[in-house]
Image (cartoon, rainbow, N blue to C red):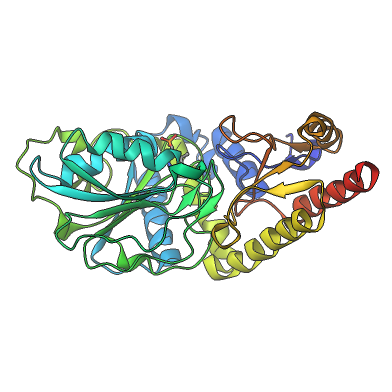
Length: 363
Ligand SMILES: *Cc1c(COP(=O)(O)O)cnc(C)c1O
């Protein structure tokens, strides 16, 4: 059987879908051929079998454990990606005559605002659009009569991150797609958290929603069955066929994280990775970070070159050294290095060494 070690060394800085632990790829590929020694593929077993129920149960319980979730928070595995949550959240929570507060601090948050407006009123409490979302707005006011406050914890495209939870007495809702489980935080302060799995948790095709039951059931509109969080809670994420393989990969990745000591331990490594890369950028005059220092993301490091003409050449040298997917998002340009949990420190070391060599020969 082909194993991961037979493949060539690649340093994968993809922003999503992105790198997962090699052990997870190995185990997932084995489960496609022979799941838990059943002689069956994970792809051909019924979702209502004990075999799959155990996978889902372990995914839910491990996530609860890793996030230290209180019992009033329900964990759901749903379809449709984080983008579906942009409208499912207001559909379940916001009446037409009510107002929800939103922070506009990046491309994804802007999309969430657009969808919320289809269901009720949006009060955009602050925006960093004036500077291409290169900072996180501060000192804004969240009116205490807002139905909820929605924000994006980490702006995957622009490379900014909120380093504290906003102080407010209204229910907090966050899109944590690109930094969930990367650092410790008090997840119990949130009424609803959502995240597409394909950045830090698993394979594309499944979406994690964590919700407090007490905020549900308060809108007047009729909800389609598949859009109603309460129905998913009642049915344990099994209203219809879940994306079984994607859930399985999530379970394996969550198990991997738990074995590595959980969020607190991975946070230490994530801090080292981010510090090494930002220190390197700051120390080399040819490179320049694009976002405000205090708002820098530890997951998605965005940087450009003082002389954009050199960018192509650097990209070519990255490729020669096995560094892939480091080209910046088209809206920002330059480079973006995503440092998700599964990316080893060694990959950042290879990148920063190359940056130093490049700066030496082009300084
Ligand atoms: C990737 C991403 C999304 C979109 O996720 P989909 O699963 O593709 O819908 C939304 N929000 C953030 C912060 C993201 O990084």
